[in-house]
Image (cartoon, rainbow, N blue to C red; front, side, top):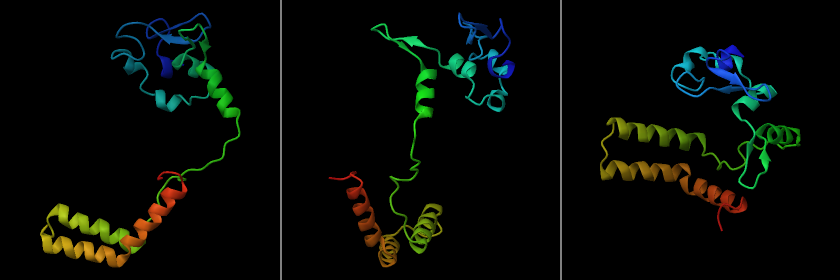
Length: 151
């Protein structure tokens, strides 16, 4: 608790539910002076304990008088079944040859190892086309269309 919220009564205090809350002023655990006491926070905090979450994200009352509990919302969301779908909206990757040529070509232009002349640029684009940029663009278009990203 010391690593996450600082010293009780100095950087933090307890609310009516015995949850640590930051005091007002620069000494608070979120303030410039109080920060030195909570530097190891990332090593100690895991955002799993109810006390830690409630202290950082306390309940609040909306304009219509409804109490909103971030902890309750989090716990409800964590209890739901989820399908992991990382990368579902990632465009198709280019071929290794196309990607390598593209990255190296731009690096040469950026660093000045290859002069950015119309002739060099045209040759660069021509080689990209030979390596499949049009096909890659079409794959991306079809992917985006199928995913509902384009109309």
